[in-house]
Image (cartoon, rainbow, N blue to C red):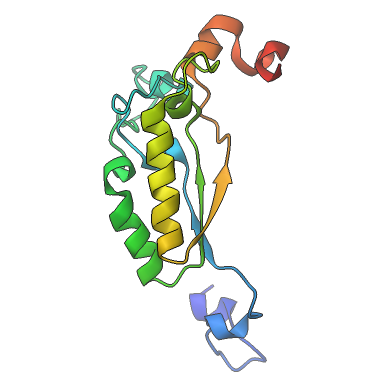
Length: 158
């Protein structure tokens, strides 16, 4: 089915535009930390289960990983400018648990990780983009997986 066929209105073939939605409708974009941030060995970030998985030979057909990804960690201002340029109202992003608590258990808060997310949030707000945060998006700190078995152990939520 062609794109225009999906958006036909009253059989007239009109395209959908932002004005067709209620004034309070929020248009946004979304990402996941591991898939976009990169900088896996920077900013005192700890390893996540995805780092281990993607570096295990044979797990990813082409051997790619999120080590660099699209380098959102270094290029977040450019990314925020693009979100603004395209007219989105919101950005849903996840916070990497390993970037905030490198050991996973909060023994030490990573100030560099906190600064990255604060800077990202501030850049969004400056452009009038509403931040929406996902606290966990499948990037468990590797230490928690190796030390207690990850989500299979009830200690993880205590």
